[in-house]
Image 1 (tube, rainbow, N blue to C red):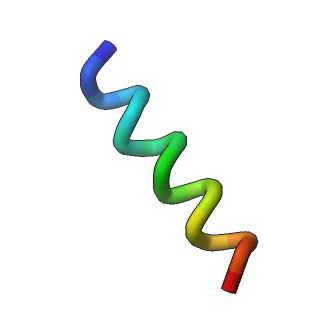
Image 2: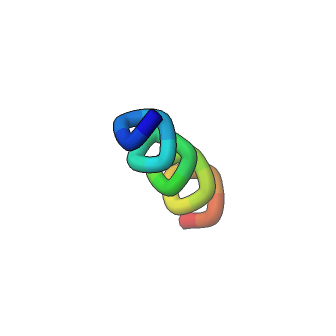
Length: 17
């Protein structure tokens, strides 16, 4: 469950820039 939060953050930062 902790690893899922890390992936979510990467998804939001990747598409933003």
